Amino acid sequence: MENNNPDYVYNNVIQIDDADSTRKFLASVFTWMFVALGISALCAYVFANTPALYSTLRDVNTQQTTGLGILVMFSPLAFVMLMSFGLNKLSYGVLSLLFIAYSALTGISFSFILQVFTTSSILGVFITTSTVFGIMAIAGYTTKVDLTKFGSILFMFLIGIVVASLVNMFLHSSGLDMLISYIGVAVFVGLTAYDVQKLKNIGAGLTYGEATASKMALMGGLTLYLDFINLFLMLLRIFGRRR
Image (cartoon, rainbow, N blue to C red; front, side, top):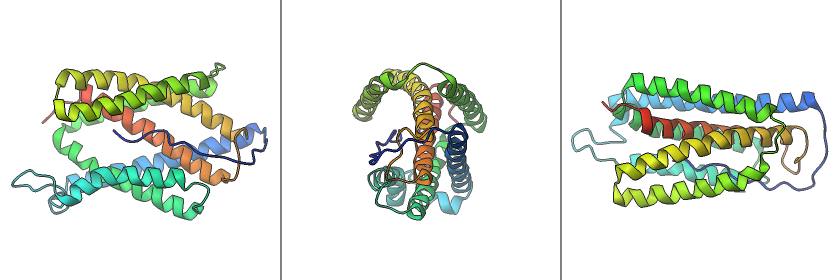
């Protein structure tokens, strides 16, 4: 599961109450999200369907993951942490390059998924994820209910999912894995609405600070990208059909 919801620190808060600015900000957020998804999908497809590239990740004879494959699977977390903690120090250009590199590495790691699950089930789960994500994004944008009070609860469940997933790496319990997946779906469905509302507030100028709007749009795109791919992975674990 990908690390989700990096925390940002904003100082020198200013107020900019402009509906048009909010729409432009969210448009930039979703643009970054779609760009990242496109890069990940392309990298996953290329590596999964190019034997020479895939063999650098997994030995075709022993079916053992190579050192590069292990690096590809775990390095994206380092990119997320670097971008999160370096938001106010790194330039917009550097953050953009890190986000693109992160999307590519995540896509390359997803090439393992394309080898395990059938193409039809992956496509079906992707469509389902897109539909659910879209509905919850609209709900988060339009609802008048303040979702911030649910943020801490969702975050605690997220921590629980991470811990349970680590424990299950040793237990190998299919029942626990399925329970984690169902809870994970609920958590990331909730986080999608929560994050969209949070980004809407940011776009309205409620939490602007040292970071520029362009940086914040990029980080917002990262947040929604993480929501989407984690929701996709949880649904795939439930409904995906193995080859």
